[in-house]
Length: 461
Ligand SMILES: Nc1nc2c(ncn2[C@@H]2O[C@H](COP(=O)(O)OP(=O)(O)OP(=O)(O)O)[C@@H](O)[C@H]2O)c(=O)[nH]1
Ligand SMILES: [Mg+2]
Image 1 (cartoon, rainbow, N blue to C red):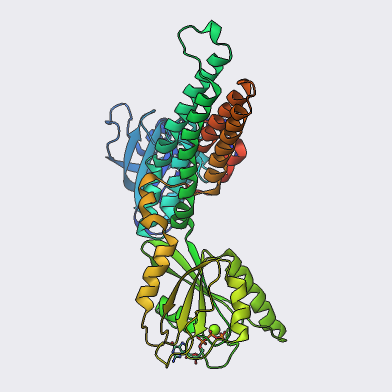
Image 2 (image 1 turned 180 degrees about the vertical axis):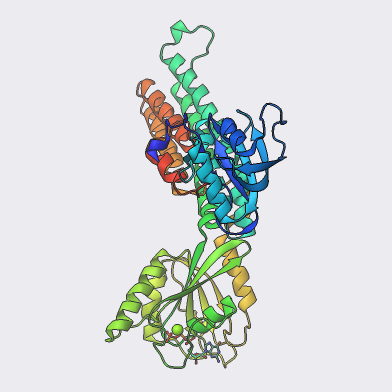
């Protein structure tokens, strides 16, 4: 992909529609020769066809052999997806036709586009910032309606809109601080003292820190959340998984140690894609297979956004339950008293670890209490009731790293002003914070970063 940068004098071609049969397939060309090549293939003259308008054409290969009856549309630069001359040829949706048309375009001098190359050109030509390009990639793969809406907001520039004004504020503050270093020269600027600088830095820092918080929800819409089901053997973990998935996924028996490997399934809860994982019962065992299963359970619990810790409510809790609970108690979890259809025994009162978010009674057998449980899971996974979604949350670790870098630089700026250091120190830190925000939107974008982002796109995008 690094080789894509600086390749803009080439004309690229790729199908913009997925491979396979369908009503239409669209061939996309972008670059300096997009128009002449499209003209040779379709006979349509871009000078006489109105721009951005479909016109009928006969698609031919380089030797004039008829391939298909189609449509062609020209998007003259810069008003196109990539910012270059773009032509699109609509063919009937047969992969053989598409292949022939791509070959014909290549025979005329086009080169096959690499994954994400159209979008990469759009980014390099200033058609969108990096977070918008990421939003686009996320929109294409979104698994739930809410994920799609979140990605669309990002595609529409939500992150940039939230961050760019903060960067502007940092830059104007920087001008003031620099003028204050040497204020005798700058008569029209009132100098700032250290505490005034600290105050302005702190205002911006608070807003950036709030952006950071948005990630905990933002990434759940993009990547989904993981909810682990844990507890000792035979408390009904697998039966609960089956009930939550609405299908008979896991084997359920009265024999303790039925589940020895973990099993998972996906559900959409209030728009969040949630991966539910049923784990092997946590217990000491001599069986090497089950022991490996227990080890995996621990790993899953350690990485889960939320764990449902099950007790068998129809019997008093035992030492094994307490031992297993010790592995969950520090992580965010709900305590579930299962088997509420049987006579009750265990209240769960002794189970109150640091990560406890609530106690619920359910019956995986009858379904009693399960809808409350679902609502509770959603509440735990969407802090602030999802209100933060309206503000284009950060969705990737890349975003978090950039914003954190800015926040840390501002922390340093504040310390420097507090310690009475020369104003040149906070000036440096403020500049670094502004630069970090430029990295987020891609004004400064190392090639590796571009490579990583655009190579995950599909061909033709
Ligand atoms: N009455 C009643 N029985 C239940 C309930 N949930 C599970 N069971 C029964 O409890 C037994 C164990 O259920 P499983 O779902 O296999 O338990 P598990 O926690 O997955 O057990 P392991 O895989 O061995 O760790 C089965 O006989 C289930 O039918 C419930 O809510 N009520
Ligand atoms: Mg099981």
